[in-house]
Length: 362
Image 1 (cartoon, rainbow, N blue to C red):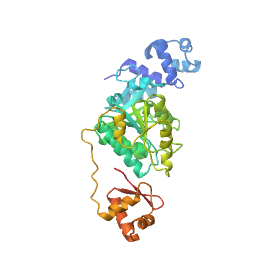
Image 2: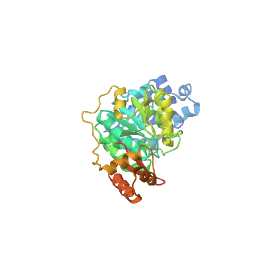
Image 3: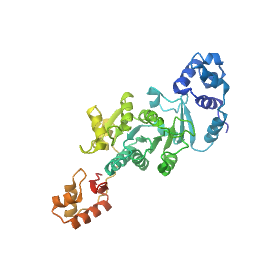
Image 4: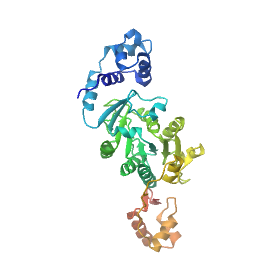
């Protein structure tokens, strides 16, 4: 089925070098639509944008990229949403710089449903990854689509949790939707395309340039009712998303951590600045006036014997080394090592660099 002429016009305009979102919106306001804009004279265009960009519009030259986009749209599960579409996400219309076009691979309807952004460090701890996945699954089961950025660490865990729940997950990319970055998330990206959605404002073939990722963060927060930061260092890019969320009038939440952990510094700073402290997914659902899932999934922890419970209690909530644990519990080094191995296999603790162990809260 041939593409509508107006969609082709939207695509052609969006591919003009140097035009940008603001320039495109300015032209649409002046001329009424993309087809009228393309039909305008160079002189008329130059009244609203830089003359070289007006010249580029009249000269064309985007035929190859346009043909690629049209071919991509002919494939199942691919779509482009424009500002003129009724299916364009309403929440994005509220932000300062809504993208004129969104390339979507997957379930485009998820972009218009209730959602929560979940972001955090790429170098997350085992506890952070567990928190992100567990919280995201609860949000998803409560009807919130989980939005994140497909990065390593917290983002990936959030997507996995969202996909495991009822409402799925959406990844906002800093590349074209036909490029998976990072490559290690290729399988996850395919799962999102099949059961959730991949979305980008960047044209097909756009490579992962550093400047694109802070820019896409406004869409991660813009698509959501609120933003949860799971773990973040003091200079984490996740704090950009949290700041943008606050500027967009969205709720900002942060999970506190150990006072000794560098990955808790960013979350603690957010809480000091007014972000709401989140100790459980239920805290966030209550703040958003949303009901908890009908059947909350309880973790199926293995039964402990007395020594295992004592060692887990002695571990507490901060990383600790085996020698200290042995001293706290009055156990030999061999007994402590055996119990640590058992607890790790059962998923209650995780090893950290430097021979330390950390409790995983479920």
